[in-house]
Amino acid sequence: MKFAVACWLMSSESDHIMYDNKYPLASPIKTQEGTQYRIAIVSDLDKDSKSPDQSNTWVSYLKYGHLKISDDNTNVAVQFDETITLTSQVSAGGRGMELSELIVFNGKLYTLDDRTGIVYEIVDNKVIQRYILTDGDGSTSKGFKCEWATVKDNRLYVGGLGKEWTTDDGEVVNTNHQWVKSIGVNGDIQHHDWKDNYNALREKVGMNLPGYMIHESAVWSSVHQRWFFMPRKASKLRYDENADEKRATNLLFTATEDFKNIEVSTVGEINPTHGFSSFKFVPGTNHNVIVALKSEEDGANKATYIMVFDVEGNILYEEMKIGDAKFEGIEFV
Image (cartoon, rainbow, N blue to C red):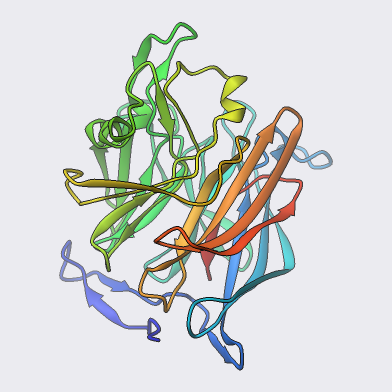
């Protein structure tokens, strides 16, 4: 089993910029049962992010824990042990700190606000504004609805829902949520039109318009040289806000870099209200084991579940409920 070590690589963007590829940030611990990693998850409380007792303040919860995995990658245990409250006084339309992902990039830990489009760095359990992403091609004033993040070729990629913005009648208003942003180590931001890529994924399973697919989790695998997607919701029917609560998927897509070759499989049984909201490859498993979060929003009921499986879809750790709140980002820290 091999572990990432801290080293510095020259970035292709600049001879003066170095990339820190240390991952995870904390060194793993060898035990008799296998290897233990430090993990963290972050919450998206939607409107409940508004602090009830602090004016002009929005909150999110950062929960720390450990994931243990045996040397043969067959036995897994997960435990959470600490919760930190993150606060910010930045909002858009009276909402903020609706954090949808956690990601280690260039030796630092970041999180994304899907309401304001802010990419925060988490330092000493506090959030610091580092980047602001704007909707669509970047020429709008609206914040980008950040939903997933991954690192590819020393750049941080941040994606949207992958679904067109439509009216109640299914008419397409714009494709702003089908754009992807990438951030370089020197802070440059590029805007990528991913409409064809997103549409290729749903065409694979016959969910073209008026059908749809909603993505909240995606990871680039440098080992497999493929994109991995686990959509949270999908349907061959037109989007309906109420019906959408029970349109979760158990789909796992992999695609080549150009999205010309796409494969799809399933993970476990479908629970119509439990949809994937974040996943990461477990370090030391050669990108063959995945830990994932599932979010539930069913009327007033909200909850989060964690599970572990391999890329063949074999369940190693059955869904375990984390709590009655929505956590939408997981990372090895």
